[in-house]
Structures are given as structure tokens and as C-alpha cells.
Length: 158
Image (cartoon, rainbow, N blue to C red; front, side, top):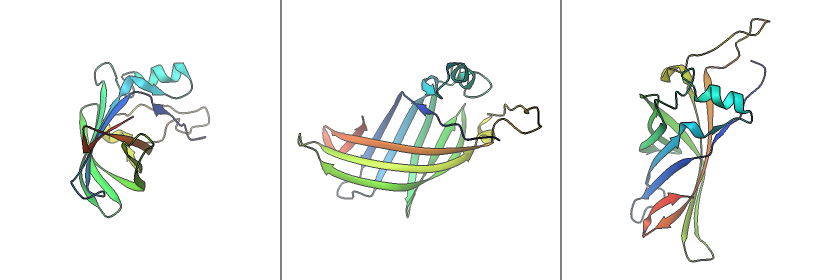
């Protein structure tokens, strides 16, 4: 490996359900649209969307659903390409406040890592010097900000 490739997903929905009276007790549901991946190079984006990686035409969504919180970790199920695995995300930042318009906001930053091969993302190639082009490890850095909708405990990412 030569360097770390950073990318992002531009299209997603996230729902946060905060348990009544407990700002630190919540459930998170996240749906990411696989074809919205952005890596800074369109030819690479097409390859990442292809059957070699995300197979976005067949598996349009990547999903995470939290199941429990353990200390500073949010544990849930990650689904990529129809494969489901438990994923532990470290909660690195969390906060809430009322904004200038009287709406409740909640922010959360999460960090995690998984092996892409656990989800059938097996493509790789060797460089001329014999090094692998793609690491099996995927690092996640997730930042979400929610605005309360209807009920002050139900929030949707914006």
C-alpha cells in the first residue's frame, strides 16, 4: 500500500431515536446510497460502484442499525452487499443544543474499522513491485448532525 484513499458518500439518510429523558441512550439507523460514493476521481468512483466492490446496481444501500451502547461504543449491524456483520463504532464526540430557531440539534461523531473481505469486497491487484493496491481494512469516520422532527426525541440527519 502506498497511501490512504479518502472518500465519502454524498447521499444518505439517518434517523436517531433518543430515549425519553436520556440524552445518551439512543438508537441510530443509517442508510447510505452506494452509488453516491465520491473518491475524487470519476473512473475510480465507477470502479468502486461496480461488482468488484460495492456492486451498487444490485445492492443499492449500505445499512447500519445500532443494537446497543456499551460505554463509549455504539454496537450494531452493518450490511454491505447483503452480508451482515456486527460493527463496533467508537463515539468520539456527542452533543446537543437548541439552535437559533428553537429547534433541538444533536451531533455525533463515530469512528470504526472493518475488513472489507467480510462483506465480499475481495478485489485487489498487485503493483509492479508486488505490493497490494487495496488494503483489506476500511476505516470509518462518521459525522452526523440531527434536527428534531415532530417529536423532540426523534431526529433526522441533515
